[in-house]
Amino acid sequence: MAYIDQKKYYTNDAVAPTDLNWGSYQYVSLADIVTNFLLMYDGNHSLINNEERYKILFHAKRGIQELNYDAFKEIKSLQLTVYSDLRFVLPSDYVNWVRVSLFKNNTIRPLVENIQVQSALSYVQTATADFTYDADDNVNTQTSSLDTSRTDGSLNSIYLNQATLSDAETQSYDNNFYDTNIGARYGLNTETANMNPTFTIDKKAGVINFNSTMANEECILEYISDGMEGGDDSLITVNKLFEDYVYAYIKYSILNSKFGVQEYIVNRAKKDKTALLRNAKIRLSNIHPGRLLMNMRGENKWIK
Image (tube, rainbow, N blue to C red):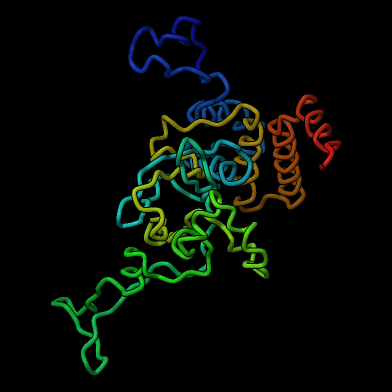
């Protein structure tokens, strides 16, 4: 990231968006990564010589993707309303989910993933169970009875929530149901005992399916991106704590794919890459004495 003066950092010279540069000093751009590598690691007196820029760019992007998967702790969040179709479309840069929550009454309630199938494809069949086909000889499809029963609230579930409780049980917090009906839930599977809605992620369809109790509710999805910013290379950045690791990743990837490079050289590059990744993770962990002290104090709490 190029150095900028304080006024441009705070106001972006009054050009919208004025907060464009806030926090930018923590990151180095993909273009700078590639240029720096060509300047410092590619040359006649280096192990890597006359390497094409597009190859370095490819390996740099692959290294940043690997970091986003398990090393970076930069989680994105998206809030949407779930309507009667009980679906939440996954963001375009979605790779994996961290947490799905219900936002209700100014409270964030983490949801439980449903282990039961929530959506299915259904083929149109004749009275003799034969499939029917369209003009292009593809099987005709229709909305499955499973999807219909899920959206209309008639689908039975193993989960304890508003859709499966009786009227008396849904008022348990107000009339002390569990105090006056001792043993009514003896042997209850605590894995499925959750009053909140449940969800299932359909990766192939690119949606999150919810049960009927999530209709017209607000959902917050916390997820991990691959860091590729929708294919716009000019927006791709990497935290400076991982800058040396990305250089090491590019170096190892090029040497590992080159013909005639001695094995000990490749192994040394791999060890350098692994060591730099470990060091960067430790730096990014932010283990502050204050946080450790708070955790230690929590262990001495008396349970009354």
